Length: 128
Image (cartoon, rainbow, N blue to C red; front, side, top):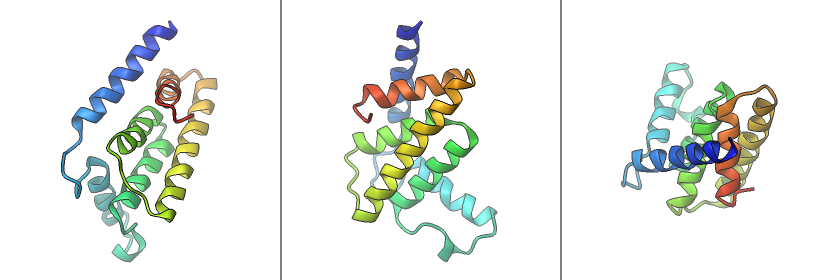
């Protein structure tokens, strides 16, 4: 059973990595954050300013919705792409990582199989 979940987790990470764009300026995550901010009625000055901040905000939204497997995949993708962080962005990345991990643990206790996959992904990539 654990091997199956691990294989599913690795497959999910590979699928997420394959779905990204090669452009440094664009990420499927960051673009969604812009439209989310506009739909919520927030002024553009309230929205995160950098590409990394927008991506991390979207990851936190995924985590809030319980999509911890997708959020974990996005964090791993950022790491695999070699994303460079400012000091503030690095702190925000660590906060998002801890949030995804903690939320996944909560959801595993509730029997959510996606949460188990998220934990496996994070653990197998040396994140935790």
